[in-house]
Length: 127
Image 1 (spheres, rainbow, N blue to C red):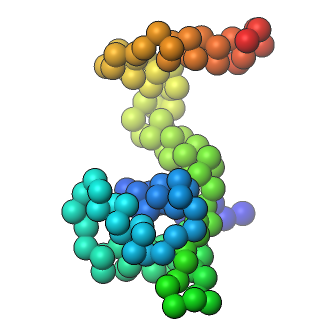
Image 2: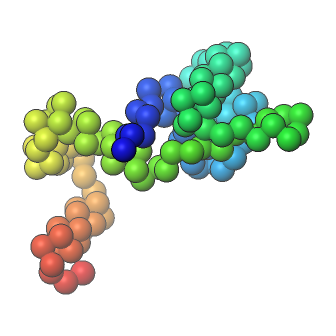
């Protein structure tokens, strides 16, 4: 069984726009990306064409402006990227990742409560 393609950082940015906003034109994706970084329209277009060739995106060419939709599911892609990151950075230890994340950032009481609830659920405890 083939594994899903692993998006690059730039490809992931495009996927995030499509996951958040749904099927979109290159122009829309480009405008969204331009809000946070300087990127050329032709670069966005070329990347999206490459992503379609890699079967990360599907282009609907029935209208003048092609509409692209993601073929990769957000949750599966996040899981795959996290697994790769965990293996490469923390030798596969989720505990080390969590300790590092909590040690480097200010965690709100609400976030800590969510983490406690998740731990309770994982341990079979009550919500």
